[in-house]
Image (tube, rainbow, N blue to C red; front, side):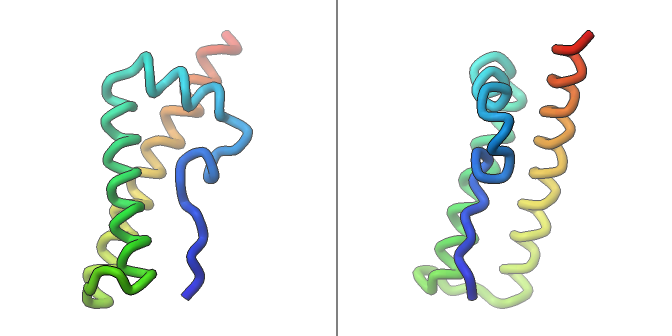
Length: 85
């Protein structure tokens, strides 16, 4: 299994400044980013064999991570749209 980094700065490399601004200026975004980070770390530990989990559990965690990523992506897009208006 490959261990591809899924950290937010890796997922959105062109949006580092927006990510930073949202993390420090939006409490909801900061909470989402923290949840994403914790979930991503748990998935990485499972994939690396450090923690045991069933395939079903691993897939559930990945789906949850993807859902958080979708929400983060939407917030980044909204911040970009707000910056251009």
